[in-house]
Length: 176
Length: 152
Image (cartoon, rainbow over all chains, first blue to last red):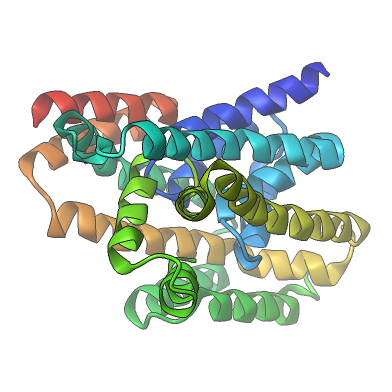
């Protein structure tokens, strides 16, 4: 029971402070979950890869997977509830009581601040994750092709994910 | 997910019009949590009040829960499989690439298209805290919000 409450508390914290989209959640999850030694950094990257290749928000998928890993199905459900409850309640409270909150000047300014920090937060998780992968030419090439195909050529990420998985099987299979 | 929401709810079923869709996006940006959850709660509420909001939110959650349940069991069962291991090895640099691509597009909007002195100052302070001082990201977000309120 104590562990269930702890999972709920961790993901409630993450869910309450993730502003500015799913990717902003990655450094928060990493901080709480890797630092608490629930998963290693390598496992965390694999969980992100799995979450990314499934339908549904990456942050929700990753949270569910981590919850699962800590405490089975119940852990998965509890982790998701922690993420979902703040998202659900905040929208309900706003549409019922404060329809004009997003036009409030103070709220607008707070979000200028948050939005200025979010790319930096995302960048910090790139640096942190980078530390835990092998610095081989192949890895740099996969990274580079992913960035160029998505940022420059607007390729559907699903296609890139599929191709990288396929390449991994063909290239790394003899090495693992 | 947003093009899907737009296509189904606005164009196909006509449940909401474009102004409501844009309102939904704006609200999802200023509320915590994944945009898909925020949007589901919002559209569900517009269509059928609190029960609608609850059912729509559960719909998104259930898909993730079912898929992760299947994939988690599968990955535990085949945890020593060479195919799975090598596939994940190929996907590690991909994940970092995907996050980097998200950083580029978000960074372009934030710092180039809508950049201002205030934005740069807040970005610098956040960068110093998170990259050098290793501050908890929750505290960084909180401070950035406060800075935004006082600088602007």
